[in-house]
Image 1: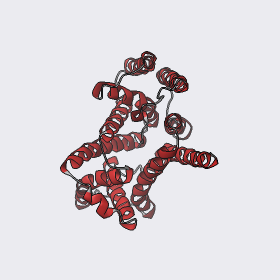
Image 2: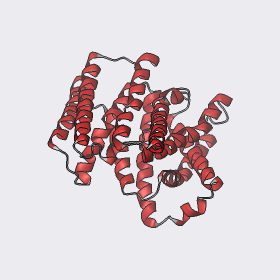
Image 3: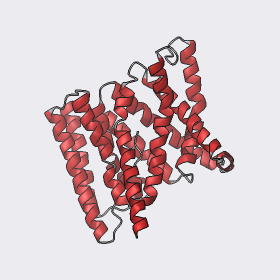
Length: 308
């Protein structure tokens, strides 16, 4: 019993650390604001692939990884890779364009969007009360659309791309390290080709923007892979309900950064829209915890996300 408690405690610390790291990503990418988002993402893909491949080589798992590759697995992870790259691109662009608040909204609504995708594509069934927070969140999005004059497309793009990514990963057989290696391997040549093209056109900034920027670009692989690997460790030893609660650390930090650090405007209309989403999340969390006490699974596995 003592050993189990220690494992769970370490797992909770690891999970919390993971979400804290993801939450501070806007600070990291803001430091790269002079670099176009497309170049940042290309570097993130390329350096991530190099980093995780080195891990496989050092741990002598490269042959095991390669032996698992089949056409079916390649197709599944090609879809996952496209969705992940889309999510990364929208996120980095939104942060550097001054939309950290809307990006945080995307990760607030992501669990509810992911559950809805499970209902649509996996024919999962929600308890009657679980439809209430989905409806409240939808009302929040509709309110923002009407008051702002357009869809909150950044938030929806992030939630839908990562929700779909989770949906594809549900069918994917590889673990976190093997999966990330394959996803970045699929994207590596296009990313490298784009960076070389930028270099030939004189618009490439790597090697031309100072040592600080060069270092941050090269380190994007590490900061992308480490939280994912930590998350994979944590999720094995922490109850799913706890992970479900901890995941709100990330958008909460991003929300505070948007207001307090980056000085983004938090208008009354945004307050109402966010408030409706927060009410939905509180309702969803309380209902899920009460269901857990009755022995019902509180958080569908698909609602637990690996952001950014």
